Image: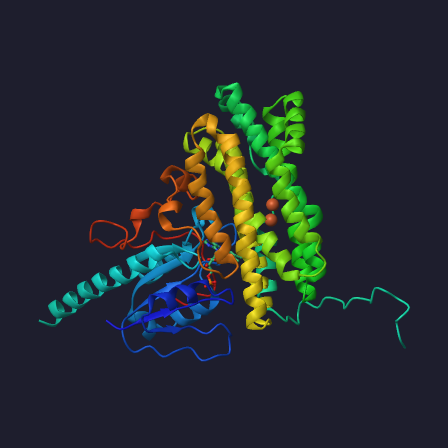
Length: 142
Length: 325
Ligand SMILES: Cc1cc2nc3c(=O)[nH]c(=O)nc-3n(C[C@H](O)[C@H](O)[C@H](O)COP(=O)(O)O)c2cc1C
Ligand SMILES: [Fe+2]
Ligand SMILES: [Fe+2]
């Protein structure tokens, strides 16, 4: 399975987490006009949450635009969501929304820029997940 | 024409169709949609639960809430207005005026709890207690000194983020604790609305702080960072003593301190800094975490769960128009 794709707004929390992961990752641009990265391999998406008090708008517009492309969406394998538990029931809601919309597993949730434990778990989890995904691919190809 | 005779220049009229910083509009929109008043919360449903608390637990609760009222009063009357004077964009000033008003709503809402659940005399006594409490006064003093120091907009932002993302939590712990035991659950709902607002305030002011830091040379950034960690140490010292004074009686002080460490680290993250407290010191009682964000238990994601089954998110009833599929 291919790489990581993430979005992070100007506050940069998700970008800081991805930086600490130390894995190759591709960033969805913040500005509407900027070209969206072309995705050619299966990937996991890391996305923060920006909901209003009713849960609307949880997934940033830039990410929706990115996922609206059917070819890109077909390569999405799972989602990791950022947020803040201070948002109560809406904690990391973008992960639930993307998971339900795109029918991919919600892999993990973290707060703000994550902790050391989060980066360890994400690295280990991604390795496990990739291994399982590759097994599946082998089975379908066999 | 020169306007040297006037100390105050005429401000630019705010044009929301010409943004210098998109975040101003995003945060404005979220804050205005999130607007609420304490009347929205059916606090009177907590009357039976209140009468089940011991007199000591009641006094503690009222005191904690007067302490929180003080912090919100400071943000309403001093903190947010001081930050407004430092604003870089006219839109930032508008956002801060919204924040200032919501602080007044927060401060006001504790009194709604009081008038619903408590006797006037005991409330008056608790306000007197807060005015005389050395720890509460000491932390307020430290924050106010930064707000008043004319020199540094960035230091003011640090103080504000520490107040909103750290100092509140010795108080917020208690309604989360009661709520985890099915006590005062409506009051907890009200507190969660405040916590949500404070999360956006801390985010926004922390974000503006990071923008400001980018404009400083390396030496200046280091100086501010040293200041921030120093202030956090000083505030933590006070908070630890305040916590013991309040919670030793219930045997909860150590539990509360974990919650303080966890929130101190989040306050630092809002400022773009790394964590200070080690992770073992930040393991918050799961019951408190569950009270903070109900329905978001750990094991529902693949990496935390023990099994290897995937979970697909439940259909969320929050449709946005932008999805094409
Ligand atoms: C206006 C606003 C709304 C937010 N709403 C939520 C939310 O509903 N749930 C959540 O878990 N986090 C919420 N957050 C927190 C962000 O997801 C969190 O700060 C995240 O780390 C931002 O990532 P970024 O800096 O990479 O953009 C919100 C933040 C803001 C400013
Ligand atoms: Fe407040
Ligand atoms: Fe606030």
